[in-house]
Image (cartoon, rainbow, N blue to C red; front, side, top):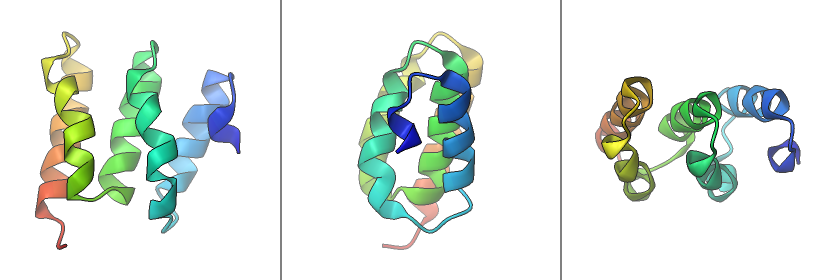
Length: 88
């Protein structure tokens, strides 16, 4: 799976493509990308989890609310809001 790639661009492309698919089973493979050192990868992971995750995913996103980067904070907050509004 390309989510295991060391190529940042490839990972971002896969994260974007996953948003178009109904594949909640990949959520555990996306969560580790929330800790990536590259902000653009973290932001794509937030956006993808907002689509594929569920309310349990909120706990993985919450630490990013303390991130000093406003763009990461905003994407995490947006993802959390979307996940909270999802039906169980």
